[in-house]
Length: 610
Image 1: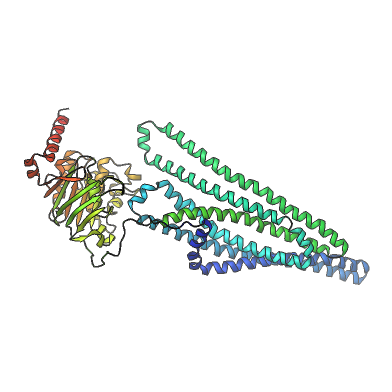
Image 2: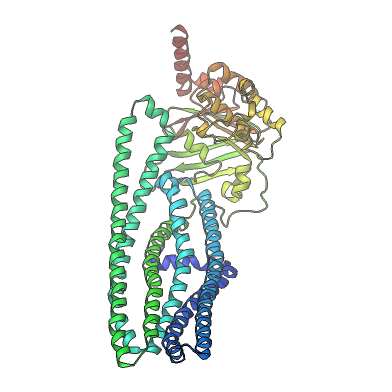
């Protein structure tokens, strides 16, 4: 994981947003223009109102002077027509402002949705490339939160926050400019509450940022709790732990509620303060404006104009509060997202990668390979040295914790050796492009994972272009075809999350079929027969023997019966190769392998007698 110089959250947010602004400038630029045009149209409305209000006393005076005469009737008609004209102008300007406002939303908000889409795909793609170690440090719930809630917070900054800010700045600048032209003194009075408003916004922003950060952290904890509970629901029920789990969830949920209310309290306190300060501006305008009207410095129409301008600035000034809140939340979220983007995969294509290596043939060599999960930890594997010819089979046995799984995870580069080299076809594995290397390997891990899809889709996951004939053959070799035919919907049977509707043995056999359908050069089975009975194991091994000579087969098992027909057997003990040879040679040497074999025969005899 790369170490980067810490940056301020706001700077991280702005820097990360620039590429997206450039990419969607064809939407942002028209959107910003529409925002300014909408604001400009709304600014003209008070000017029309002022002209209408100021014209009324003059027209009334003229009408009264000629009341009851044909001239008076004409003046009345003119008076009425003038007012209608002003009204139509106000309606037209309002309509024009609304049209531009619609265009603003149809561009800037649409752009923000495109950016949300891009950002979420970028995050998912990056998560796919990160190595196993990253997922040991981050919980699933935390990553889900970052892919959903955090990205949504960033979208709100990119879309609504920019939209509101642009319109607010234009309205405030234009309104204040007009107000200063009318009366600098009255404008100065009207702006008296604004410094207090700015100070309150500053303190609110700091509180919102901190509370948003801790709220998102607790949301991650809550999501992780739900994800783990639902994934392990059968274990919870089996141990009657529903009540205890409910109490634990209630505690986490209560903490989330507390933090959420803490943030809501800041918002709740900010709103009345804002309304009071804006209302104070209106009061000052009426008070000081009335005095200036009496002195003849301004007109009554100017008072009406000022009141409308103050009202027009109410939402923009409020928008700054919302925008600052959005920016603070988005900055906290982008900081969390950036930590993922800054994480580099420990296993990736490097300068050593060779583009001319396009196919895996199947030979596997370990040269003095050692491995430790951390520099300060004892090595799990120590000086492993052996060779497996392409098309031959290798069996790996050993006690629990001897390092069998760790050893085979070095072959597809799920892990990298601390010292020594793992070679495929005589080339160090890091020289193979990862996609080429792993596409040539069929790996059945110890922990079976099935997707919430049909059985056919789970098998074809190993090769998305697999024909039905190939899927059928893989299922038959995994001794699964008969079970599938017994299901009412056959291959279209939906297996549920993690294959919950299948038995342990059926899940393992589906996983084996998924590897077989790839027709890989190297087939690795990591204790993949542990959940099946002895007879099913024999059937599957019988099918697998057909692959001997065609592809390299590596079988890891705690059962000697699963590996005894292998061309070569390696016995691991505490991370080292204790013995190596064929079944007959190892039995003749009467060492650890022979002891394990006799112990398992005795266990089988006792099980048969019970």
